[in-house]
Image (cartoon, rainbow over all chains, first blue to last red; front, side, top):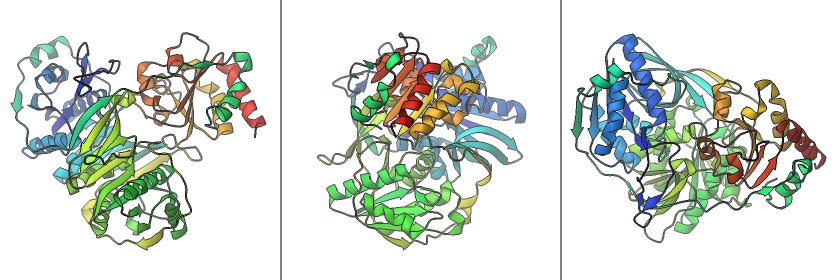
Length: 244
Length: 321
């Protein structure tokens, strides 16, 4: 089985978000970058499937050279090789074009990625890639088993979940609890240094342009209500905040 | 050129989030001097769909082919793309949801359309078309220009203040060409909690964390939610411990909500939790620890024991009705 896992190089979930250059650029100073948490689940499941069924796991990142630290970590976790498309991932459509272009050169049985990136949270790249390749796309997938050429999955829906079956190949957006997160061991870290990491140049153009960033307006002071007068809250929510 | 809104149905009725998308679409149409068409797919009836008129729609296209009764992402995408062709729509508007994300992505690829998700305000037409969207899980915003001819805009809840009018919309049957390959994915079972307020759709949310001490204590949370007509939610540790189902988990790696009111009970307010709720209009925090970081993000706070405060709030709401 050939699996392609697409990963994002994103600021840590606890990172303080700020902008520079007249609010036109993300301020990377002091920010720790990680592999997207949902992408980590996708990679972990891919490595588990490889252990069960044999095959290869290729990691794909659309990003600049600074992504390579995170890519090496993915190789240490168990991917066999990696491809980096050397460009800034500025637009969902543009990122999907890169993935579809790479995927169309090989016959992957599964293209896995996180349900969404945690920087732009659009959750549309899997769908875009599926349509560009003419194959089904599903997200968020929380359980994935492969039986012959068929994938048996559980997908979260609003207020519950549904069981799904579909033939490979598929594009899937993943989320917990599809797999246990894997932590690289020393042997993995050593072998990751020599695993192939190919750098290719991008194709196509994006269809949106991010012009400016802004932070939310600071929150006003919290209004405290003494616990013994808790009932007053209802009156305040009705008549002051007007949300009831 | 016109505006097309993709409306999701729930038991035959247009979902609340989709009514908001219809209103958003009609405001775009007003600004561009054009009309708003709604596409509804699946089982419904003309009266239920005509409601769209009150939210500014001129016409509803209804694709009622029985094969579309269960939501097939690929089939729905094909139907929406065909409706875009039939209406010469420039703008395709929808509410962000799990189905909405999937369908809008595939339609955008079919049409080579600009796609922007998590949009929080009406577009600005002063220089091309730009929208304001939420990024970094609600920790920041970006202004984004849509440069392609066709533009797909997925809105976040409360992106626009809906004003219900007395307009009416005509309902027309829409019979798209359906392809067998669009039904390749089989749904073999559905597990859905019934009779509860849907969390992503809810205006009011009561959420609880480890401060509740165990799943057996959730009754006081559910009582408050029932009294308010609110949805229930929980923090990540609570869902990790299996005290509550995963689809109630709100936060960075769970559901992101933007209700009018979010009441957090016994949740300390880790940055990852705040990321999922910080677009809420009003946040109430109830926690016995006065140092809980959540109080800094709150509009109203009560330092107190949830086991004492929640039942009293429930009583106060029941008494005020």
